[in-house]
Length: 371
Image 1 (cartoon, rainbow, N blue to C red):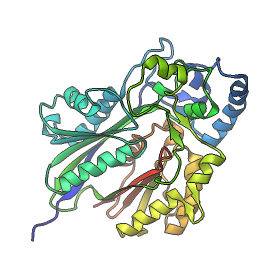
Image 2 (spheres, helix red, strand yellow):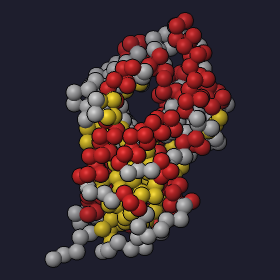
Image 3 (cartoon, rainbow, N blue to C red):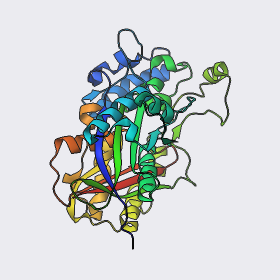
Image 4 (tube, rainbow, N blue to C red):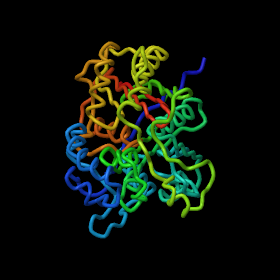
């Protein structure tokens, strides 16, 4: 009987563009909204202090020069910088990568980001794939790479994720006369960043961090979308798109979001996490870090109330959002990079991560254990 192929994390990397930006300077980087309706402008004045208190984020990062208003990075350059850091930790040359999996919220660029990353890393030939599925995309890219290695198709993979959220949050992006509260809600939640992992095949679990399982599901088949734009599934005339405001990224909130996130038997996050733990028979007795990929400390702490019943102690919650903001999909890899670089892991320590996104209630998670 052949020995199963184990999947080891040999390198992690992260990249946060620019200098840390305090909450009070967000409008300096993103630009002020000045052309909204009177109702929206009054709401903006009221909501800013509320957001500051609720999010409890000290600093954000933006790939924008506040003086020139020009971008300093894009999704590809940030992913490449995070990838180089992961390759350096791994001791892996770019040309030794067999497979690239890239995950981002959504992208319209052609050729796709995965082959642009391959090109900038100087990799002449490798397999690649891109996944675009909001905050689950990084997890899905990891799952694809994990399965590719575990099934013996490839030996060494680079998984990267990046997000220039600011590009959809800048004042210049909006047709401000049409912008609603839902269109502007995310300006305080999201910022920019990238993360990357190097995965390698191994014969046995020793001397490092290994993937125990990866999990994805969508539970939004009968729920309305709570986040997204109004673009159709074909290319529009850009002028018409702008004039109708179809490009605005809207986030439902308050009662509309609450009603669809909370089911009678618990939140979709809790039920999804519980299902993952049961499906993969995860032993949480050695849980060291629980990394919740949600956009605010307030929301993360709320789900911890439910998670306690699953045997997840509050003190295992790991979040660095207060120090660097929430960059969306890559945040899960950025936090894992912080753990591996700043924390001493002991034999048997378990790292658990889970996310629920609300564009269509897609969910994903993973478990990793140190040996």
